[in-house]
Length: 453
Image (cartoon, rainbow, N blue to C red; front, side, top):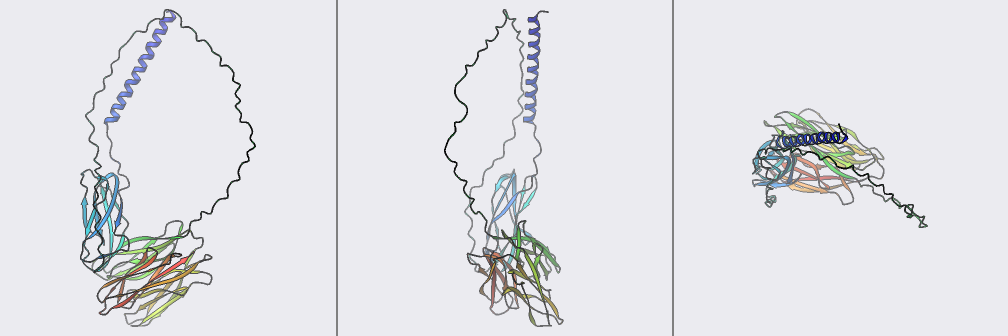
């Protein structure tokens, strides 16, 4: 067999191999393109209540628009609204396959004054749910209505149409004989690249290198946020819940949210969290909320000190405690029981004071707690704001910290017979809501503990 014949055979074999590879790739592409897989379930929809905001006051016996935003790459098919754990409204997506972004405005009408817990839930087309953070609002007669959000066009987000029927791929292979060369292939001529005289090194320069500028101070000032945790307290039962501060922050104070059916029996620091305990006095379940004030970018630590007092039968009494010398008050709380409702929970110089009324014929124990910061250069002040609460009505008052300080805790001062249903951070201040169960107007005072760290 001549050299030319061998060349023809080898070329034919290589051409056949190339055609087989092309055919295999085309078939793989065809089946990959036309074969579907299951939709990933994902982590569930992301849900946010945009309006009303935490701590807002809404009107009683009027429709309250609750603006919810939900998103999920698997398509949101429904958004539901829960108030105090019970569903009150829902809206389905206009597209049966769901929308990646769905922002309905749901309606809810509070029928009585008081504190309410709102939470939104979204469901995607794989039946995976996601829930928003619980927010606390207060319903009050003659409150300014929340404006209905301007309607915006819902994103169409039309799902992709089903893929077209597979189109067969036809591969035509035509064998073309390779011509036998009639003369040897000429050898390539080696061309030498002429040398260049262009220098490749960078000539030295006498320009001096400027000095490196000194780094600027980019320290972040301290700031406070509020962590929230909610639990359901069954009828005629006692429940507790703790809200934990995120890593890198320190708990400095805390508060609670509930309604007139819950007697708050404990509100105090627990590790890097704030714990709340309550007795449910009704025959239905109610929601209890713990709220922790968490401060970031501070170098010192917080600790809790304790005081105690015995309250004789059928009288009111107080218990006080003070932060150690060299430390600064940031917040405080109390511990009691259902027979010893606390009506005052306030700062007292560089310490804390709690007052309670003993409603039974035996002596009861009242505990008080102060949260103290051991870092240097801290400065604490207390700001108060008072409002009147009419008989058989609810009232809300907020004490705001000055611009050069941040709220680190807070409390309240009322009269026996007022039931405090909310004591929590609002903006850079402290907000308190109470229901007056008496037949005469009573005063309600909010106390904000403001600090510069």
